Every structure is written in C-alpha cells, then in structure tokens.
Length: 348
Ligand code: DAH
Figure 1 (cartoon, rainbow, N blue to C red):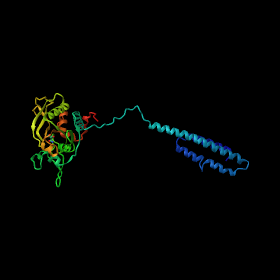
Figure 2: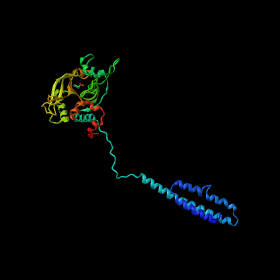
Figure 3: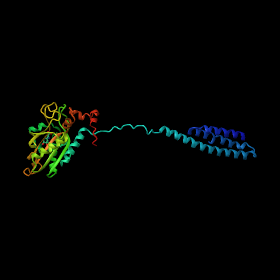
Figure 4: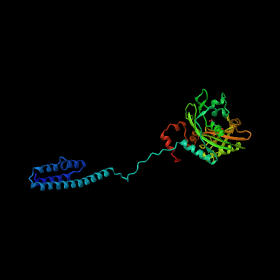
C-alpha cells in the first residue's frame, strides 16, 4: 500500500463517518477502520513489506491517520449522541398547554354525610359522639335494656344470631346496647350520641333493609326531665329539617324507657295538609325516645332515685329518605354510582 492508497482510505473513512447517523452505524465504522481487524491495522501490517527507506515515513503517516480518524470518530460520536438525545426529547415532549384529564373524585356516602351532620348538630348541644361493637352480647342488646329472655318484646327486633349455645351473641339489631355500655364506663352527667350499623333478619322491601344505620342518644344527670328530651329533639329536628318544623310527641312503648314516646315532625312536603309522603296524616314519625327506665339505670349501678335520663334511637336511612326525597331504602347499599354521585356535597 502506498501513500496514494492511504489518502484514498482517509477520504473514504471521512466520507463514511460523516454519513453515520446512529450509534450502530458508528460502531460499524469503528470496527471497519480502527478495530483490530480494521483497515488501519491492515495498513500497519504491510509495513514489513516496505523497504527500509519507505518504512519510517509510511509508519508515521499511518499513525497520524489513526490519530486523525480517532479524533474525528469522537467528534462525530458527540454529534450523533446529541442528535439522538434531541430526537428522544422531542418525541417524549409533553405539551403543557393541553387541558388536564379530569380526576374522578370519590364522594362521601350520603349516610356518612348525614352521620357527620347529625354528629355536628349534637356536638353543638354538648353531646360527644362515640361508637360501639356491631357484634354484641345479648345481655347488652336485650337483658340489660329491660328485655329479659322470653319477653315477647324481643320479637320486635328480628335478630340475627351469631352464636346461641353457651353465650348468646347477636349482630346488634339497634344501637341501644351502647346506652348500657356507656353508663357502665362513665359516671353521670352523660351526654353521648352513638351512630352505627345495625342488622335485622328482614324481608327486604322499599322501607326495610337487613342492614341499616341508627343513632342512639343518651343523656343522664340529676334532675333531667321530659322537658330536656323535648327541647333537645325539637332543636335537632329543626336544625336538620328547617327552623319552622312543628314537632309532636305521642306515647309509645319501648321496654327500656318509661314513659316512651314517638317523635314526629310536620310533613315538609304538604306542611300538615296530608300527602303521600306523610300517608295523609300531616305528620312524619322520625324516632323513638323516652325517659330511661329505672331498671336500666339500676342494671348499670346508677341510683334511679338520684339520676334520671332520656334516650332516643333513630334510623339514618329514614332521615336521609325524608331529607332527599328518596323512595326506596335499598338504593343506599346497591353501590350504584349514578345514585351515589348525586350526593357530592364536599364535606370531607
Ligand atoms: N332501639 C329502638 C329501635 O331500634 C329505638 C329506640 C326507641 C331507642 C326508644 C331509644 C329509645 O333509645 O328511647 O327500635
């Protein structure tokens, strides 16, 4: 190989290097010219065939070309890498001017919203909110509430039994057992409300669910009377259903209160004239209440001659149905977003 061929090699190498656009093409080029089996290694090998006069100059020229091509290679590599990076950045670019995709926000279940609202109304009246077990001992669900075994009143609560051999365990059919648990733990004065899930062995229809939520209220102190009960419940109803609500108390029977009452408000749809919602009576019953029975006070070790108390129990679904004009209780627990997402008041 002579200097002419070396010149040709040089031109070819530069031309091909300038044409290399990718890192793969670059490494092919490198193997072809600068690799162990590349053109320059070949050229060096031919040194032996040259005469003593020719050898130094040709050797020098090959070395110089090697350095030149190595530098050119590095420079080209920089350019190719830069171009590839730019290409990558361009294809990955985010258009920050595009409108964002809306994020689906969950909403609080309408009953949860109502539990919080009721809790807040009673908090302002001095009541603490507490919770209790859903799987309950029959003693708390019935016996301690003045409903002894074999008492016909037990049939009122269509109870789901979890265990009935050695010890009767039930899914609580009402929140009233928490009256007993609370009084066992606290000394008077007591003012609590207890929201929570309840369960009953029910045939389902538009007004009956086997699972529902109640709130229990309990106040015990010296000198508490029916007047306190009436005033507090009237205030509660007016905060929930509007300040102009009329209220009505009528006698009712619950084994754990004496006297017992049912509490009604005038119908917010017809204002007392009679319509479908109030079944023509003008009144809507919203809860049961009464003065805590002396036997219940005695069962928790309170002196019934010193302390009196009042209690109430109320179903949340019924309140929500009235408040929002819902006609089928089953809608609450069918997890249908078309129903649930209507209650997206942001109360989180
Ligand atoms: N526990 C009753 C029920 O589920 C409701 C009730 C009535 C609760 C009167 C009370 C009360 O605290 O005094 O049907």
